[in-house]
Length: 452
Image 1 (cartoon, helix red, strand yellow):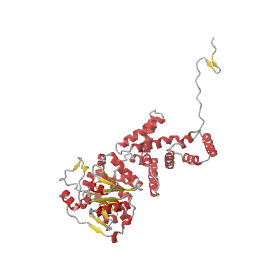
Image 2 (spheres, one colour):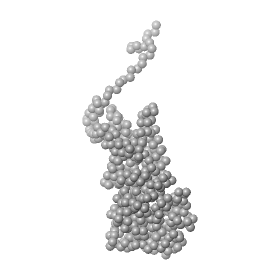
Image 3 (cartoon, one colour):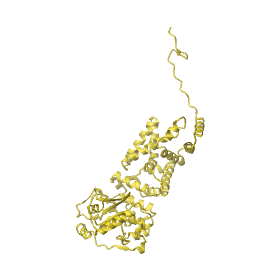
Image 4 (cartoon, one colour):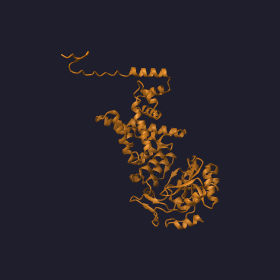
């Protein structure tokens, strides 16, 4: 009843009745025990109260291709207020479109009400766009068919009912997944103008899921790439972080460059990849990140962005030094300059920017291997991140590998071996010339001249 009512109230002229293809369990083989307990609790509770409720989007996509979903989202005919009333540990979030977060212990499920309206539905006074076609405000409820049509790609418009274990498919997304194809729902040009981030999502899904972008879906991307400049930098950062933490950062960054999308995110990438040393450094950083993610090891976003921006910082540092600025002030100026430039396009949160600077500032200190300085550096809370960064620089050929080997030995050595390492390093270093103090006129080695 609720679904029919919402469909009548919010349906637009562009929506034509479309019957979904229902894929039975016998065809797809996805049982409900592969869905998180929290998501099952949400769908079961909503259905018991006469609402429709399905696991939707990326979770269904990943289950079909054999990936374990990172999270489970639910779409329902219930309004946010009705959802919140059914779950004690829940809260309504969002301004543009209200969602409900339902908590089960440490697990969280995001519940959304079916969305309505279409790009061409000009009857709705609740949708506003900018001059480029990007949706600025959109909070229209609808029915399940409309919700499927509002999603970006066919592979993300699939609904899984844990009760019947059926998949509901309105736009051929199931077959597209089997063919490893990414296809836009509706006119790609119009949909990219609605939300330019969809271009980044297409590239990320293709690279991280080893899929191909449909020719019609790919065609407008390069010409519409400049629209990314109209997207809030904070949203671009969120999308870029998903891309870098996908476990396929290398493939994703290369795909961004191929499609011409990096100009809105990492415009320095062309410059970096034109430098053999810079290219080796960035590629090593991306591949190491992918390997850590695939091994279920932790990854620091700060370290990633520090790696991507390092050679720009290095170039600015050398330029400032060449203009007469002392080395340490020159490094600090270079860091601020590059982060400010990048933040205009990609809003790197301040907490990450601070960590990045700490990693960069440690790099000159790794060259100081005499006296008490190495001991003090070992005590620095950012030593490990700085050391890993140094090893990348050594592996790329930017720094003498012997320096990385020295620090590898020094941090694990006993006290006697550390003394020997310090002695060896001091002996290998060129002797510093002592500056002679100028004598005052009329003075000799014994002291001031006797008064006459």
